[in-house]
Image (cartoon, rainbow, N blue to C red; front, side, top):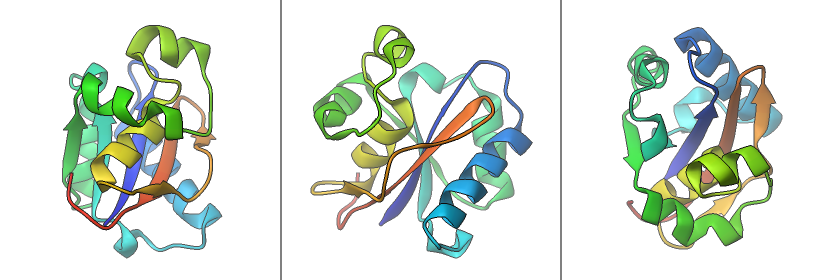
Length: 128
């Protein structure tokens, strides 16, 4: 299972989210078809642009609990003080991707930042 984890500032657009996903995939030489899902943290549940982007990309959006994000936070690469203070994890995008990709998931690299959105790609063998 390959998952794109999404973090963002408030008020982003679906276009912003899609651009971040496309840029992250391109950085790893991957096509959109490689993705199984988008994922984000509970803190982003009300950020409609993430769900609109999922619909546009024909991908489910998995909302990961704060506990699930914290369980994988030590495996994130990026460290954002703002993310840590607001979401309890050093990277919402990286932790979301890891948590959703399942046990033993690995990040393909650090998150990609495109304007107000971050995207991290994780590969795992199991379901969330």
